Length: 221
Image (cartoon, rainbow, N blue to C red; front, side, top):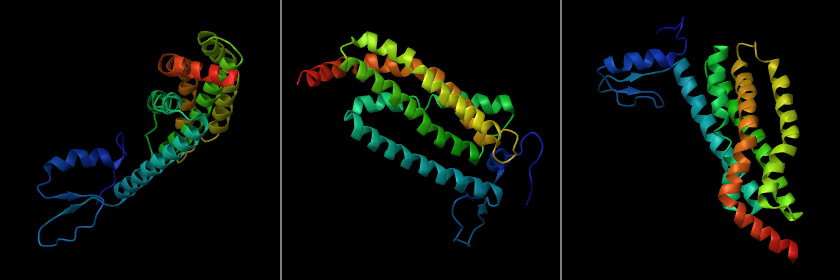
């Protein structure tokens, strides 16, 4: 039994260093039922961490499926759906460096912040795509609709990001919920800035011509 402290407080670092030197089978998730030979079972804090990240990973997968179904039902297009959900990984560009800047470990609450931020990021993408298609229905060209969406819809996206940053800042100095605050703040800032360009560009190159043609036909009928 031991407790890690110092520069590497998370148990995973010590486990990764020790595991190659262990001459016996190693388990984490399951209890060793075969007692005829020695087995090393990692337990305690690391087992709890393993369970939390496993369950949160499963929850994140369920969230992605639900978002997928809801957005698909609204836009009725698999290609548009990919454009809308593309900025979700972009938030990691802010989350991972954000933890490094603050000097915080990526914890279970950080994962919760990543999952919660995914819904906000998808909302911003929907705002952009819906505005583009509204502009196409009004008779604007594809290029004009894409450019105006990036410009005119940036204010509500910025206000949403500001609300998230201000609301999460109260948790920034809490030892338990600091990871949640860092994920929400830095992930939302990165996604807001980058998705403003990424979503219109992806829409223009991937589905723009097809959607423009379809919207023009629907407006005529």
